[in-house]
Length: 463
Image (cartoon, rainbow, N blue to C red; front, side, top):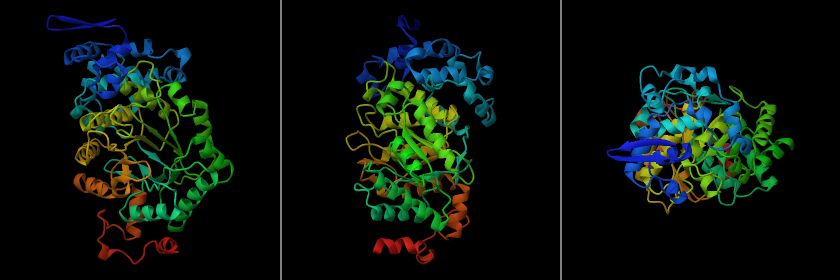
């Protein structure tokens, strides 16, 4: 049991899971699950008790039994005691103070990551203001590479997301060219397919591969089908760059996605076998999101943010190029409004980077949430200040296939200009050679653009 007093009232928390849940900032998903604090006083009492908790407790008490959950086994078996040693004597509150101190340098944080469990990351985030999450995350750099290098200081990458409700290759190609002309695409060109028919999926891979090869674009493609479809495509000779899968923080949730840790290892091995990278070999792309475990009844009574942090232990095991928290996609049942979405996006970005992941965030919401594009502008800007590795580039910020609101090609331009951020270096060099940006990284005006920079592709659209 864990206890804390607020004034004359004493509060008791019966388990570590309850303590973590009730210390969380309020969100609709935890209320739906029945694990949220019932009052601001109880929430503060939980934070007081959590602040005094030694970090070592998370090594002694697992939230889901070791025998029952392969994610727990991964967390326990992969823990690096030597990396943990510099903070092993700290409480959760002391760890927060350390993270915000000058001792927590970029180098120290990189060395610490293998020694932290996701529960430690979740716990300390619950004691942090939004400002703290930004300041601490900004000090952490996680760099990954395939054909472009993602996550370098002063850089921001964009996943170009040219989805189409019917997987029409001409529609996808038009959106892709639009994004490239706006300087998007250095994280990847990633299509969420509307179908899982192998022939149609292969046509999308081949179209993107031909475009990338024809114009020498230093980026990577991804067709976000189920990972088994991607493995089958590799075995059939398709030109696959990145292997994608949605993952979660419990074995039961991953089972609902149709995956296991062994299957993810098979996918990574398949991707590595192709040796398609030029500057690196990070071949995996994962997406996560708060509330997914609860929606699948696979949360084991844990709060949704702690479940989300556990998903990052899964991602970390496979050296990904990209990890993306699709923060507002799952709906208001889990993150009710703009305030909750902003907080969750900052938590996810901080926890993922603290655990050593190349984090991006899909700054997004669904139309039935109490949120709007002003909220997304706020989240996008504070994530840029926090050093986010990448965000989405969606035509008009409106994904017509998935039916949600995200960030546009123009939003990426605005964030780069506001914060002085540049593209991935290989992609920036290509944009300069293509005369799409100037040497300062600024987008050229329409009058300055070369005539038909993607002439063959544009001609194909007119057929």
